[in-house]
Image (tube, rainbow, N blue to C red; front, side, top):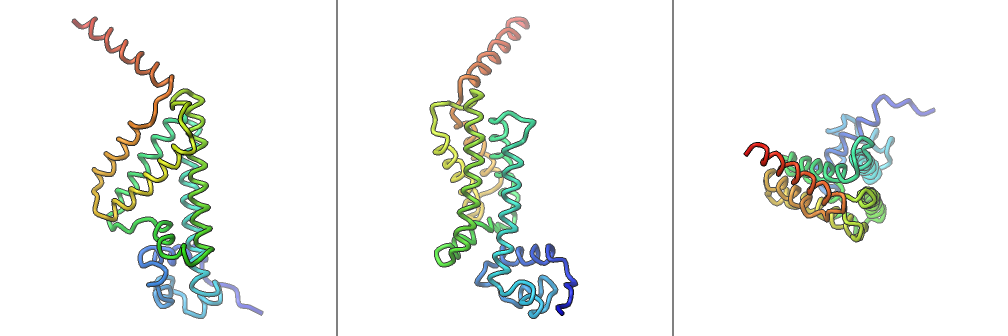
Length: 218
């Protein structure tokens, strides 16, 4: 009869994830995992099978966290669709800028290291990016229906452009770009979002209000 586990699996996976994230899969040894998790090699093998299986569990854990963050930001029921999109771009840029150790994104690092040789990793990362893109598409389409983004734009292409921009921020940060540079890039990307009919109406109303205020004070 197998002995019951005496450790918190969630905590073990989180500790392993941090090691894999920092060092990469190949450079991480079972000894490294044992030191980080506090488990002996036998316990690691008994609970997770081998290093690769533990890595896949850790990767899936990170993907689940990413999925949850993206959904929360792009489905916020308290905000119009364009505001959700803007907040998402700013939040992602802020998160990247806060990475002082320049560790980068575990998904991107895993894909770069293993996607061409490990189908499970490739499928996991592809699935994550596909779901992220789908959330962006849905948000963009709603903003188009609201008249806040140009309805003539291709929402699939625009979503791909935004996703490419967000992933590119990670590469820039790892290459030495500072927080101010990344945040400025995010604001420029927001400014480049193609405005819809409602955006023009709001701008005209704001201009009229400004003009009347100026006339009253002169």
